[in-house]
Length: 110
Image: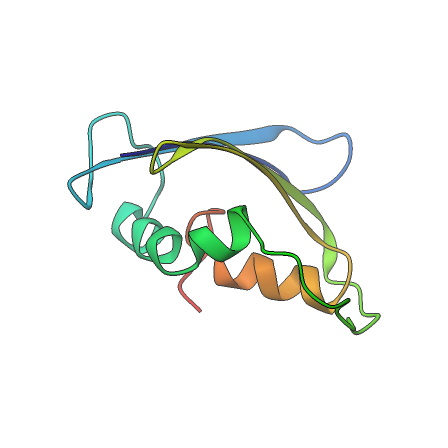
């Protein structure tokens, strides 16, 4: 089962958008409020394990580019495990994480 709440702020000081993804048996379920729940679920199934529960490894080199002030916080449960993940667009690595989970963060499929 997946039950995630996604809070997105486009910029500091502006209103926050809140969405929810609930999935049972690999399908969006009642309570889901994302614009494209099937795409969001596909992104979570594909990238969720690595993004929500990254394994330790060597330091990553990230390009020093700025993708914008957006911040998203994802909380809830993914396959029975608690999730609390923050997404930003502050460098190349963070932009890549954001793009991978784009449908979950209210965006489009990349």
